[in-house]
Image (cartoon, rainbow, N blue to C red):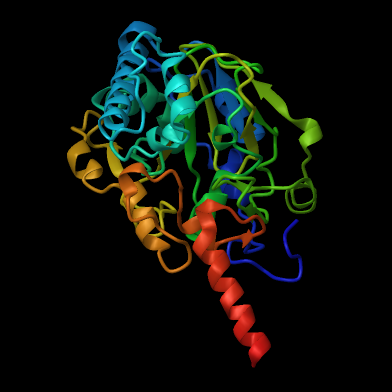
Length: 376
């Protein structure tokens, strides 16, 4: 439970419901482009905070290349660990659903290394700039669309605390200037997802207040922030009792905003649950990245077929920038190539109620301050 006597930097107490409710819905097209939804579903996005689309992508053309890219990423990781003498087997006899599990069993933390990749494989770039997907986002944000640097590749292995994300609002990870900005998140799985393998849960209408509630950091042995039931009730006027399970089949997606409370469930299956979350916003507005990395322009009204400058976007490694931003409050490993801790500026926003390897230096610094006070 957070210290209620102190206002942590992440909690402003300000409310901007007009940013994320039906008042922000752009005019809808009379004739739908490929990928666009009937107006009733777009209204659901603004009224409920999310919408499930079970059939959206062309699996063979849009998603299978991503699975092949993931296979390449796992191969690269295995080779790096093998050449460094950290694993003795490349586990090539195992498929995409099992290989990472075996690697992580031999060298715990491999899952985190893969999660921390700072570059976008070409297949992921193609997915982010997918014409149908941008047509859909146009219904939510309008014709001018930028991609946020805060994208995440999820390699959710079974019963792994590091890949089980607790209740939170996405805005809780971002700078407070983004509390006035609507961000559209698209969560895309690369296999059928359900309760057993750890699909998402959301709290319908949990965004309605337009507020970002108090969070704490960091949950268990992770770097995740957490939104507890009391703060959810008090600030957002919602409850986990109203949660909605969101199983998404392969080829579908979950579209939600940056204010709705959500989480992912534990993966109780025997395979890896692969997914990616991509975020979109209007160009020119704050992106919540603490000045660490700019957006990538995806489409404009004047140039809907814009050539996306991925190379410039990828030239800044977000993970490295995040780490550099908190060197004064957390311990940063010298050997970043095999570092399995995660740090970022969200750690400045919220009370650190749980101390682990991800926030080690902060704990030591606070202890030293308290010692000095006692001596004084």
